[in-house]
Image 1: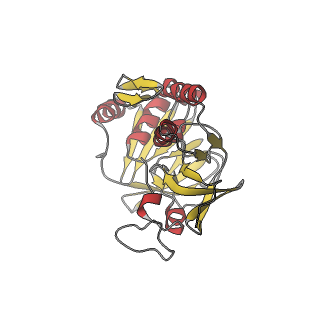
Image 2 (image 1 turned 90 degrees about the vertical axis):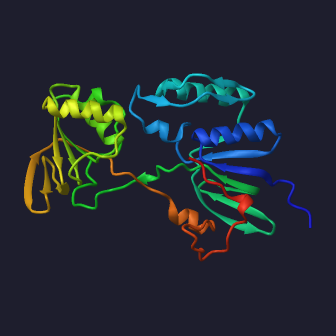
Image 3 (image 1 turned 180 degrees about the vertical axis):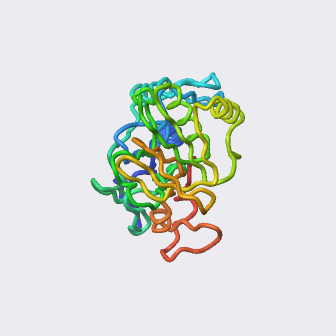
Length: 286
């Protein structure tokens, strides 16, 4: 039985660095493809980095466009490079199309999005590991004062700010917000000390805490977010109320497991309830 001639060789899901690299490879090999991205812009997780954040890369060839030769690029510079690659090569990217799932269609896969459907011989998932922001599960976190990313720290002045988390994103956000001396910045972390930071971030935030510019609240969890204050539990015993204008939550991401499982992707050696997708039709990017 012949395959539908309208079927694409590959549908690439995600337009971050991995998706862009995959599109370049498909283009260079003469494959028919499309890249589907739920966000309105190119860049994947890079879009959510703070302004002017330095991004570590490595020397990388991107034929036929050229190569990335430096080991560090500013976020905006790297996004501009990605955009120029798409324009110069003419890569087929579709923005604002979120993939809802896939179905089998004889020997092909039908990729279903919020805007339509695509038939493909292969589907390449380059969704990244960030996922949707992990929430705290406390009253008040759906309010407009609660943020899950920090784009421009300089936009916040004379504010009482609580940063929640103990990873690099939380540390970088706290430091960026504390640079405006009029801000009052508190860092809440559920463990008794910071242990997961890159050396550069650890050295920096330790200095800011020692100088009193960032107030650490270790062994603490947020229990409620109000209009002008935040309630926390310290050491599982003591209650604390902080006057507050903004809360920035950096508690990691929730990977799209339901979507992946519905596509037949198994985790931890466990089979899924749906018919598995053949190995050559599924891939996970970083």
